[in-house]
Image (cartoon, rainbow, N blue to C red; front, side):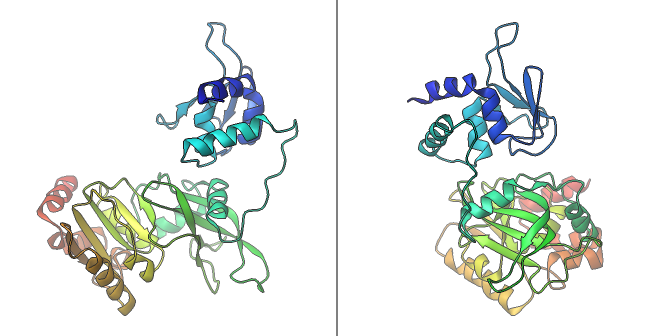
Length: 338
């Protein structure tokens, strides 16, 4: 069955599609309303369930809060299930159309797998207005947090090993993606539910899934980007340089193995001022030493750029940053400040 026919078959069952993939929404008249394509509660996304009086067909949808999100029900399923290939999308649509009237409960995802990471991310909510936003604000981070791959979960499971007791804690959830934009893993930063600080746990940060070579991508990188270790560190740099695309590795060892976009011409490496951070920066730079890639190290005064931002303030930290930038970025940063 071709995609056009599949789209028409899904549109004929638009309300069932919405009830299955957008279960946090509700029917209102001829429309199904929900927060977004990832099934967040709300009302900004609407799906036409039945033909309108003017003959507009069912199955079309749009998100008033995100003009880039619209299409037919195949598009909705692709976004909702984080599907990257046409063949996988076709299989998912066929699977849905063959479901009984009561959809089967999804089987558990393998522990620490990319599928488990993707499900966790899509079960989370946008970070704006949450404890996660307050935690980052308390760290003097002023960069926009309205980011595709940054979310929050109010009760994320915490079990650092198989013998530990299962707990739940609020957590920042950051998707780890490959160069094509597919989710391969997730970073969890567990927070104290009463204070905007990290939770008092043995491992307040845990990564899951396939993280080798991949990272948390904030902004779309083309010819220039910054890479470093630690979400707070890279958000601090985004606070100083709002237009700079950044990639966050989940650890020093993973920074050294980060895969770079083939279009990249200039790379900034935010160096953590400790032995592991220096080694990771050297490894990443050395891997690309024979390429036509300009590499510049960004050295903070204290242990990382977020600490600098918190201790020194934005104005002084920018003065420390400017001499380390290429003329192009220096000019952009000075223009933005004006």
